[in-house]
Amino acid sequence: MSKRKFTAIYCITVTIPFLMLIFPLSEIGNRATPLVFGLPFSFFWAILWILITFTALLFIYQIDPANREEGDQ
Image (cartoon, rainbow, N blue to C red; front, side):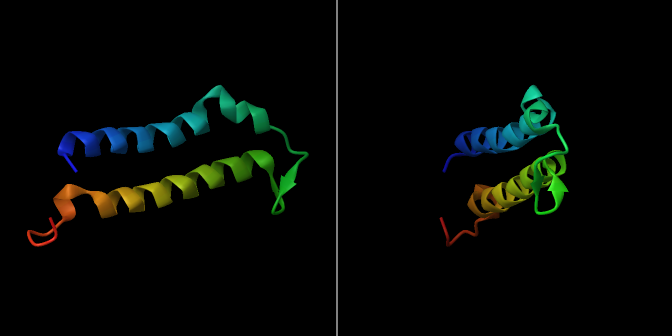
């Protein structure tokens, strides 16, 4: 994978969760009435996107060309 393609994937992976946490899309669930796992939906929404971001960054780390050894390429 080229460095340019990796950088584009990384930027998209970081930007989408950021927008989902601060953009007006978070206002959809800004209520306390629907409970998910005992949490108000807004807390669940934030925790969900934090976990999605963590998982995506672990995947990005695995495919990072800078982390590959000479024999793996």
